[in-house]
Image (cartoon, rainbow, N blue to C red):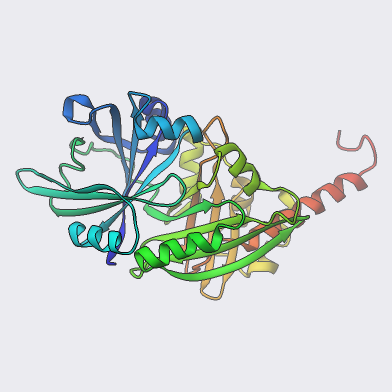
Length: 362
């Protein structure tokens, strides 16, 4: 299965225009296309957003029967379609059906003056579909029914480069089954696994990746023998498994966090004591430590190098889907060392507060 990379991500949302306002105003995306009944998309309204090589399609159903409406009714706003680029959609679709996938949309072609796009869809994991996309010629005519607009000129270059990974939460007992789903259908390989325990909470994690290395999925499963944690909270609020966060790669995380912060994006806080032992844990960091501390940027390391990351607060009412910004300096991991380090830093911070005489610093 020759998967070149992620073509785009489609979010099912209650109000596409409202969601687009957040992504454009706060995150810095541009509206570069749209579709609806007037362009042949019956029963839905879609807006295409662009930033660097990232393409997000926001879709709202205009009827209760539309897949986007049913998704939002059950899960709230979230990722409903992961679209991957392949060389031959018809061949890939036939192969997937032969491997046991359930077809949703057979190959459909749209031909323009100087471009052609072919798409097909199959059922995926949870309520997320897989879309196959094949493009010939210009990117114009993004999808059947979605027209594109000329890119606007701006003095501010994109601060985000591409989609680094997707993180998916699955219910207890479904981790291995979901790994097999990606292995059997798409020839993904498992490249990493671990069990994490912190303060009585536990989770299992496995990472699968396409043969091209261009599509990476982090799979997370709660350990129900431990007390409930963030994965359990997601599964409860999301009413089942799904994409918990979207990792977006940047070449300058300090600049990206500053830019998005000015626009109104709020990021998860980091205890100040986290940075006290940071370089002892990960080695020398080629970045101003005081700026990382001020911004709350996390740092982790593996055998290949370091990564810097930060998590934005969820913009959704259910507090489910959120964004991660990640800068890779050789590292191929996903920051698992930060889970324990953040917990230990919080413990040191609480201990310091407890040791402070009453009234001091009040």
